[in-house]
Image 1 (cartoon, rainbow, N blue to C red):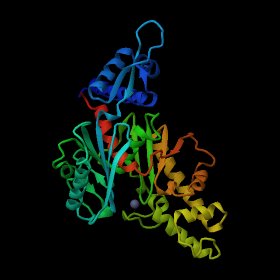
Image 2: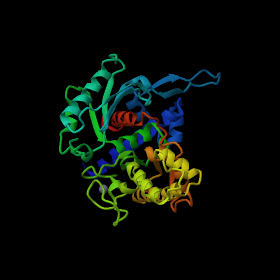
Image 3: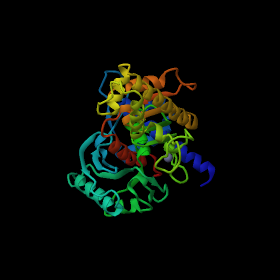
Image 4: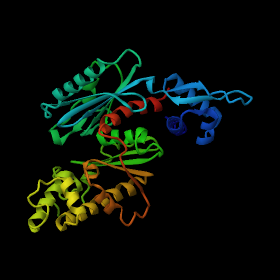
Length: 392
Ligand SMILES: [Zn+2]
């Protein structure tokens, strides 16, 4: 592709994303208003809305009569029933799947426990089976447009092969190919934090920005990056794996084999382990004898418990480090924080500490706006995204 042509494709992609997101946010809206709001020429708006109408992504209707002279403008709205999306979230313990409409609304949801996460063949078959049971309830119309699958391991960005999923003991495995078996609609597979970043971009906290970083602080730490409406994957699919940046060379051994990775400081198991250590030095703590969880830790810290406060102080330091890392690396308009670390009850005490003093760049930080369905909605958003940006 010549660079001029590549520029045009990129521009077209950004314009389409901009226009659909405006329609979605401000519907019903006329073409003239779209042109004014986006700064795009009326002819560009006409081309793009024509494409969306052809793909059934939007619908049009006459605006109500006002008595004013002249032609009544046509109003455009997102057409939630222009198609159906399926999103699947693969996790070590559980498979989740949902059918959504084009506005990301979950219409049906299923989950099942994973019997044998270490067996890639079996888990892929179970995922296909879950999709089959979701599809069984779909009518012929609205048509199923595709299946998005979010996956926790490292994927080859070209082939969709799993390269490594250490947590479940997977090596190389043709995951996308396995999921495509019998699908007869496009199947898209991506890293979980990337799918969730896209979910926030289309349906969550990032609907008004072009660039965002989704930072997931959970039992693992990773980031998903949307830049100019594109998911950033890197050459080997490793972009955003910030959990394995060294933050303490003298620190503990990480499951990846290195010492002192970020994940040994801010992941859920790491924080609870650290709390247990600190409690040994503070036998009088209100946490002693209690079942230790993020919730009890945050509550004790909020009540002024010294041991809990110490753990929280350290944790906030490393969460801030994670935030600064992604903020300076990607210079995004928005960082969306998600995962149990920031979503457990009482996590406000952590967030307040993290934000204290502000950031030199005044990074906008928000927590995820999507609920417990974030994983499947993120996976489904990949299908919508592809429809919007594909060359056609
Ligand atoms: Zn590591």
